Length: 378
Image 1 (cartoon, rainbow, N blue to C red):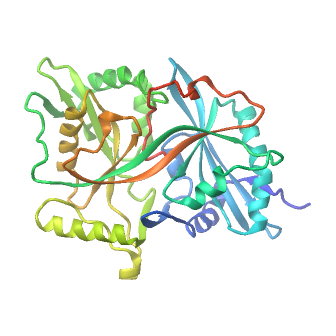
Image 2 (cartoon, helix red, strand yellow; image 1 turned 120 degrees about the vertical axis):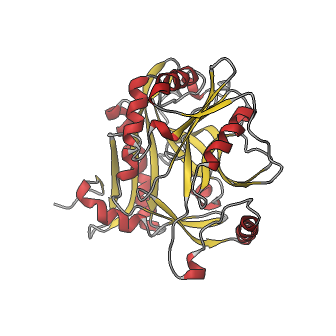
């Protein structure tokens, strides 16, 4: 009996999936290779214990495509809901695999809605790669079975590489302290209060916060900074975390714009303004990863508090690390500060809905609250 065309991957498939996955690159101003030195599935465990990878195999059992689904509990509209994130879709650019996947994609999505009882399935689209948008979002014949893509939010993956000398200093009216066990309850209460303003929040009580810390290797309460006003009230918090060897991004080549930006960072480093970017493999012959830290729960009462917390995180990170976070299109409080050296990579977050299913209420365009978009998950 022949093997099924689409099958669920097992943990024993990790090496084979890594080899297939790492032959693809992320397009944009910088061409990146995404690698997973330890285990193909390790990044998914940061988000949840519940995930699965579907593999498209050819007649000789060779891998022709894959996609993973991570199932998460989030706080949405005052209650805990289950969502799925479709990620790491990789398909060989040949007519056979593309046609086979187009025929199997909708049945997989339908199966997830029925079997996992999720409220919605989400996926991100890299707007910097026109090929991706052309393949997945272009108009299609209504006779072809395909999920409906509902745009939920546009957002940018923001990177902060340095500060000009005239950047704003931290507010003198704030007390910026590193979190510790004695302040843990205050930190959790602040996150709980913020969760009602951020749909899809991942920390809505003490248990969910502890679970998040446990999932992210090396992330401790002490990795968070807290901003307290003159009354001792928490008005902001910000953590930082490095993925280490769980997942690496290795620059293969820089476009002309990105090359000029990297040269500026080299010059700015001499003046103490900026931090360098890793050299591309095409100039060194060796693949080396980018060095950065993700911002975790970057909540602030206003833009000044946000920049004050950024100052603390930046000054206490390694001199070769830049900062990365997600910024929703209308998230004014998290705009990159003007006097910082920054760049952006545009993305869109879509909900994938089978044609016969109703659209969830929270996807209504009138809903103005921006969701919690954790850069290390999306």
